[in-house]
Image 1 (tube, rainbow, N blue to C red):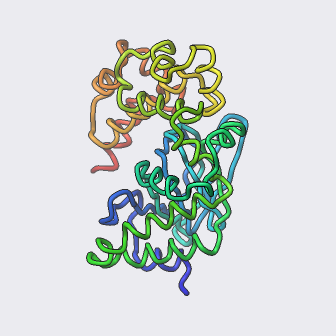
Image 2 (image 1 turned 45 degrees about the vertical axis):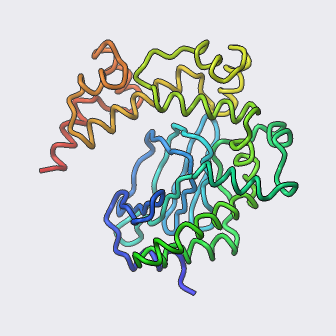
Length: 295
């Protein structure tokens, strides 16, 4: 049986993300090393078939490579370093978590599912590598092979994604998925607050408003939020705003002051200061670099 790396090498993927034709699944590739830098992952399963990535969150460091997959159970800013070269490129795929399908699977598992109480006792990690077991490896290989055919992609793809989510529910980080699907636990309440921030990052949001949405006291919410994300709510909001602004500048060629306004900054100078502090370069430098790449 071909390895995942061999299947992806045969596709000659371009650098960056590329669509597969199956909603919620993207390929990614890089033929060069990428220094440690901030980024944001949405809830999903990240499979690195070739190459290595190292993540940094708070004081924790984690490696994800061909022996593991990275389970991300909520939108999270963290720092990442990529090890790759033209001879040994980074190759992989990212599968978005389909929450309705995840909920349906947990309902079907019934008594086999981890209870929300058990999940909340451990307050699972929002992002962590998971050993890549044979069953998951087999399902991922079949998914990659089916993506090459429009009919197989349409007919087999959804079922293979369901199988992959099922395998993730059997993995060592299953508690995070069960907690995410829970309606009342602290983890699920914080996850809903993260979604609220994602959809309303340009608006005025404070801890009290987020806590009310989560049906928690401000102090309990602040404590649970930091336990899940390693950031305070306002630190998290700032990182999301800056990351969104960076995307606007790189992907849409937006002027820095326009991007600042789009993500909720009232002061362009404050935006520039915080952008440089977070990313290590100014918005103006990013704009110049992006324009040169498009030439």
